Amino acid sequence: MNNFYTDNEIMKKVHISLEVLFKNDLFLIENLVHERSIAHKLAEYLQHEFPDWNVDCEYNKKDRDTKILDEINECSKDRKKDIVYPDIIIHKRDTDCNLLVIEIKNNKEAPCDIKKLELFTSNVLDYKYKMGLFIKFYKKRKPDLVWFIDGKEVERED
Image 1 (cartoon, helix red, strand yellow):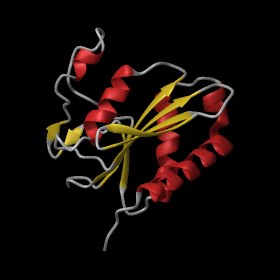
Image 2 (image 1 turned 120 degrees about the horizontal axis):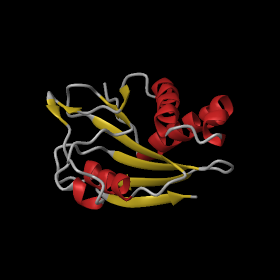
Image 3 (image 1 turned 180 degrees about the vertical axis):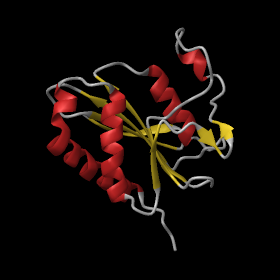
């Protein structure tokens, strides 16, 4: 059984989940609630779209080890460690099947999040997520979406 999706199928399922988020939880976005709250609700809706996968928030493990991206701390003077906690991942726990990694910001810039997505989706490191997505939410308008494949930005929706 092949549980992988095409890039377009993944994008469509994410869009469906975002529509449900905006329908059910607009309050969180309009009131600039912390990104963890928004990530949690979005992950719930993504789980419905990807029922055979695990959808987790702040998942910090690769196998049994802590998830680390070497040199990620260089993207910001405030960042002290290489340990990372992606906002949302769609994966198969305890395997090398990594479908989608998502980073979220609520009306803020995110140079480290962009770097994380480049590294998580690159073919150089062990993670090799099929796709990455950066979502920047705004109080009163549609979010910006930036998609990553093979360590590079491939599409921008604003």
